[in-house]
Image (cartoon, rainbow, N blue to C red):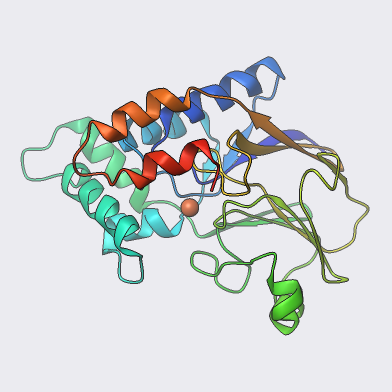
Length: 252
Ligand SMILES: [Fe+2]
């Protein structure tokens, strides 16, 4: 098998995305797949789309990417405010230049899921690839939901969407990267790996998160980036709520 990285939930945070790619370059990882949510929340959706188009072999459609195209119907007010702002600035009008058209076409072209070897990749869940959240608390409070999700795939399923990295196993356990010592050794069982978020981690660790898959070893990789620089851009942009900046330094 091969060596590759999976990233997700970049959310217009170019500082985080650049830092992650720099780390992957240092690690010698050439192949990078993205599970979606390139846009939303952060200050630089265009630069993130450009970098993903250039560097990712494959990018899937996240709920924010979908909302960019079709409107944010089930979003909270903050998420909706930013994605509607993104839509106003990214949607090409009659006189739009080539770069703007290309970005929009790229988002329109994103597939919902990807299968290769024993792996399934989606943004949300195998039952509902774009929208469904698989929460760590579901294993305790909604175990039937997790059982049903496990009936929808074979092998390993990689997801993003919650911005909370870790591994779900079929015995209804969830373990975060710390509990796994940042490494999960896959032995053919069914498991769901949440790769975490590059641009807006919510597990209390403010560093960017992604995974490197090396044959049957999945390693969670955390990367420091210039959070203050992103925050300055957000505070300087009246269309983005300040909360989108404040949460980055606590990783929530
Ligand atoms: Fe997201």
